[in-house]
Amino acid sequence: MNETSSQVGTPELPESPESLVKELARNGRAAQRILARASDAEKSAALRAAATAIRRAKGGILEANAKDVAAGEASGLSGAMLDRLRLDDVRLEAIASAIENVASLPDPVGDEIDRSIAPAGMTLVRRRIPIGLIGIIYESRPNVTADAAALCLRSGNAALLRGGSEAVHSNRALHAAFVEGVASAGLPADAIQLLPTQDRAAVGAMLKAAGLIDMIVPRGGKGLVARVQADARVPVLAHLDGICHTYIHTDAQPEMARDIAVNAKMRRTGICGAMETLLIDAAFPAAREVISALLDSGCVLRGDARACAIDPRIAAASAEDWDTEYLDAVLSIAIVDGLDQAMDHIANHSSGHTDAIVTADAEVAGRFLAEVDSAIVMHNASSQFADGGEFGLGAEIGIATGRLHARGPVALEGLTTYKWQVLGSGQARA
Image (tube, rainbow, N blue to C red; front, side):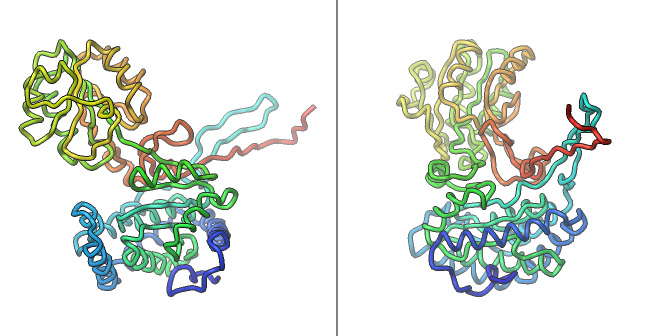
């Protein structure tokens, strides 16, 4: 397979998915060694060239997308899925602009994390380096093809992409334009490869490619992420659920509490940072007003007995509701007796994604921020801010809720690891 054989046309595929993934991974690792020594300016130029190539290929990309949308309509995809799939002039320009934004971000590769002197006198330096070859498995959204490719290339990583069948034509067209731009700028096209088959067995081969693929990032629904986490023999960076809580403490400012609660749930109900459970302190004086605002905004509430007693429009919650990511205008609500009970509820039901407290008491807020063990904890802010762009990271490849490597929005720095550099002056260990 030559430098661009996995990028354009229809290559002759190896006989088995395992052979295909092995071949692509070897090509990607070879390209990554070149990418790892590329300068900041070279990587930035390649990304800007990729954005230009996508703009130039607009007609072909939109034509390919129209095929995917037509197939999706024929197969009965939901309106929400079709909206995620559909591209137009505005969305395509947003994709190109996002690539250019990544090109303008500071390059983390080579950054010195810290420096110290060892007891034997050597200088010890920890320096950021790329992770290597990253496999990204995603569904529905063709913009992920460009976003993931840009973040990986900027951080010196090669990528092996596997998009969903719903967007197969869109992904191939976007990918072909992206790598055309990268190659025109002098970097290897095989640094960003797209799996040239939708065979599910190829996904299984990616998940088992330990030693070839360094990390897997799943982007999609719970079913996809659960399968990846269950089957992978490669480290996985992901979150399974976004069961996010907001706790309104007794000292919360009522208007602030109301506005944050409505925004955290209703701004966009289908994102992973949307609030799924609201906890209201029994001593908070404006519980009825917050509940009414949510109901009036069109939200369905499912509550415990004390919540149901506040407003008859609240339905009784089942045991399953407290562990459900609705991704819809549905919200669980419980009345709690103080901070400790709220944190106990979060510890038992949170998915470790994002949890927030609304209070004017700094000491209470400090305990919440220190003791709630989630990737993102917030004070007096909507959980809808759980997003790499809102954190000033420029872009993110996903949200991670694990305890190793990276947590929360994973952007360029999260796509690096580090090495120790030991600078001696002739030391020999006794």
